[in-house]
Length: 242
Image (tube, rainbow, N blue to C red; front, side, top):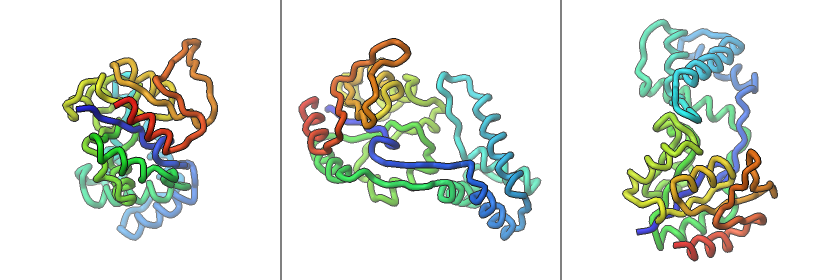
């Protein structure tokens, strides 16, 4: 049975994150102080960046990614001086609050839900996203989109980001699908199109900004390129490829 996989950010969701906003760290510092944990906003920002870099440098995968819960757990341990599980409700609450105060905007592109409804009635849908499961699952729940997707894979799950073939192969294993039976839809020519093509998936490139499909002096040619986004047209193109 054929399947369709989507990138999330820049494809289905329009997001802007700013992790350099000092006001965010001011708020988080005050929130932590309400729980008896003392750290200045500047030190909190410094620890967050340092721990992210440390986690990233410990991963040997090409195009690595981290599991962000480990970072927030380490911050709490550094402040409190005692161990907390990464899955601790307090750590999770801290992480989700961080995501909330560093998010400038998060919006579904108009027409996406209607497209997912139409396609989901005809075949299996999935997600292959460079993102953090801890954050994105909650964002999909808030939109009431989780029910659309049979399989969801994040780069944080396997510590490897697109275009690393590991994330695509992991998706295929979970979906029990062959690469040639999957259509992948994404907005990034290298991470999405090149990454999916290298293991044999069909690809649709949402070229929102009118970029060239040439990358590193080499042309990456998607099966379909859509420059001026029309969700009805995208739905039609996907259905043609199934």
